[in-house]
Amino acid sequence: MITIEDVIKNAKLNIDARREALIRSAYQTALSAHAGQKRKSGEDYIQHSLHTALNLAKIGMGSKTISAGLLHDVPEDTQVTSEEIEKKFGSEIAKMVDGVTKLGKIKLRGTKEENYLENLRKMFLAMAEDIRVVLIKLADRLHNMETLESLPPEKQERIARETLEVFAPIANRLGIGEVKVRLEDLAFKFLDKENYQYVSEILAEEKEEMKKYIDIMIADIRKELTKEKITVLDIYGRSKHFYSLFQKLKKHDMNIDKIYDLAGIRIIVPEIVNCYETLGIVHKKYRPLVGRIKDYISLPKPNGYQSIHTTIFGPAGNFLEIQIRTKQMHDEAEFGIAAHWIYSEKKKGFRNFFFREKAKVPEKEIAWVKQLREWQNELGKDDKELIESLKIDFFKNHIFAFTPQGDIIDLPEESTPIDFAYKVHSEIGHRAMSARVNGKMVPLDYKIKNGEVIEIITSRDHKNPSRGWLNFVKTSAAKSHIKKFMKKEGMI
Ligand code: MN
Image 1: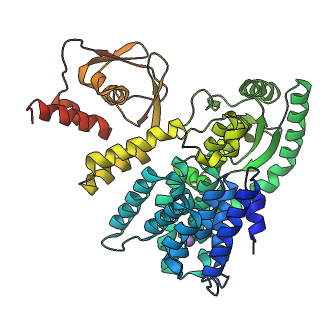
Image 2: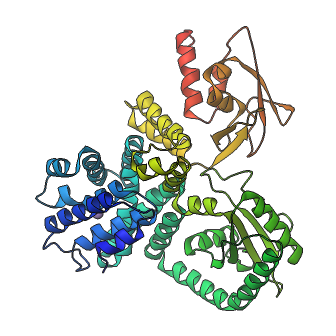
Image 3: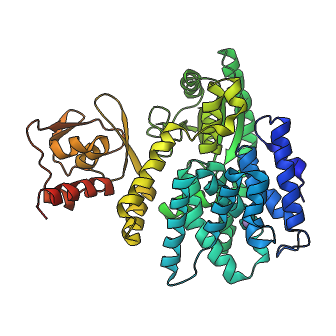
């Protein structure tokens, strides 16, 4: 059982009296609206509203989103209407609550696949409207998963599968690692009891075994870093999450000896330069495993994740993964898009910081949301095509390529120089003649790899998209530009 005090205590930033009053008032409205209602677990319904709000507070959301989280099931499940919410709390909060209600109304028709796609479509459209709606939905789903035990088995199965296939990938794409792993582990538990049990035994055994080394190593590393005058903001042992360990095991024929990051140590330092200094100090003390040093600071993962990873030989000859990152990288890895809000507002100083909920989604994210909206406009009439292209562009693993000027271009895997060209600008796509990758000429259907520098050689005189390009381009943007051009020119 939690109370509204837990929610307020966990709000990441100091909230002023007015904001606190807003949260308390939303709580009072939810409390009286849900009075007498029980969850399947037997708990008072308000516990679900409180847990949803608490999850939002924990990832750093502001008072309006927390309030909408408290109210999220009110119009759907009680006598209080959405108009009353708007009158009392304003249109911004009412719109968020409506958005969550709409997301919840999933038509159960057709095949499983269709339901899944319908779900996806709704999430995407909601994201294009207001990302906070999706964050509330994730917070809501997290608590539903935590109480899934009290539902009948067939419902458990359906909800767990949907969580794994729809909600966890979205949490991942939004960079909320903390929510993603909790959703995955809970879903795993319900979908595959046997393997869940197996993995949890491995981890428990390993934990026992590693604990003694890890404590000694932490003390040693801390001592070395202090000697080199590097501030250690935090250092702690960590073990792999259930579902991600299972995925890795499957890749390696269930051979546990092939898994090098079962356990590890995470080091949080103040500045980026400290991360590299720390890496040097760690490698001086422990021998690194060749080919296992990953610098996600200079080359972030597609969802923005940054850290340095290295696998070393521990004191007893065992492997350990060491992760090194700054505090900001750490918060962004745990809280994702919510952390972007916090940091972009902190930079602007007190005034904006105080009124941070006025803040818009940061630039990088806006570009992404804008693109969703464009696709929606372009392809809106044909849902199937929209969903197909979204599935490819959104969920497929992304890679980063660079322009010769060093700008980062985010593309789905297996993208070609033509995709790259259209992503930079449609004119560059239309005028593309040939391409160089890291200085070498490549064919236009070359598959770009992460981190490559792509130079597009264009024709000054004419545009020349060809029908053949349609056979190999990966992105829906490139496809639609080429088709549009050919239509205009009467080629199709
Ligand atoms: Mn709910």
